[in-house]
Length: 235
Ligand code: CA
Image 1 (spheres, helix red, strand yellow):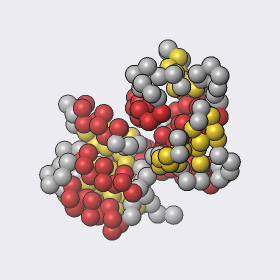
Image 2 (image 1 turned 180 degrees about the vertical axis):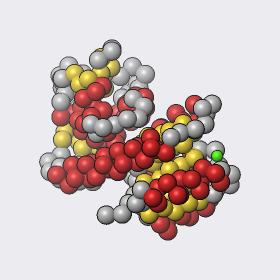
Image 3 (image 1 turned 120 degrees about the vertical axis):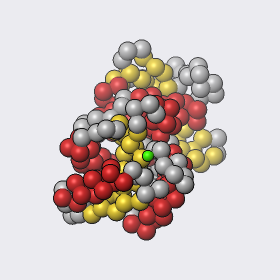
Image 4 (image 1 turned 90 degrees about the horizontal axis):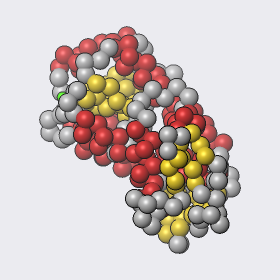
């Protein structure tokens, strides 16, 4: 099966090189030279993975990502310059799957594209497997079929990775899960991205379910090990 890759990149040299290299690798490639064109191309092309430069004319990469995430869980690999740390964090918070820093080697990028494609295939299969019972604890009910969280009668849709993370912790409440275990289960065994991604997602979950997110009582950090969800009656 041919995977479609959308490259949103304003620097012509990078754009043309990527198009050439990725086409040679057997991908179906479309390119866009600015943010607005990237959003249009995303709608028309239905890519399987997006390579998104963050510094773009006519709409920033983070805004492009925000718009993509309004309706899609497509894997997005951000491309950043070395001095764009704050953009990188913003991108991870908006739901980017991975990032590379310029200048990068084409081989590395291709490996990352293949890794996010594998992970999204696995996640999709797992999502199909897990169309079963809802999980309830601490007054929170998760519905794997709809990717929703219900609490106090309010139904909140969750981004897929946040949902998977919360489900994993709820299913294992009272047990400490190491960072490695969580990353492997939620992002896949071959995850090569920044482990900060886990903390970013945890922060977002806490802001949704903790009364005081800075002093979590349900989603507890176990220092230098990982995280745990308190078992009921102790939380
Ligand atoms: Ca750029």
